[in-house]
Image: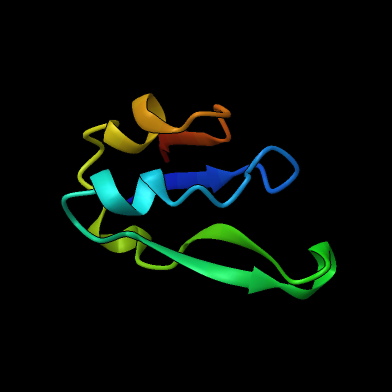
Length: 68
């Protein structure tokens, strides 16, 4: 299974990853630890096919996808 990581300090919640992901891996959720700002959360990592669409589309380069 791939390892999908979102750097929450870099993520601005633009939701581009959720829009481009063909497998619907991401949810955009409010993060209490960031004053309820919306951030990307890879909630369905098991569905990731490592296409790297999210990595390439993220405007702040907050996402990494690696093989475990």
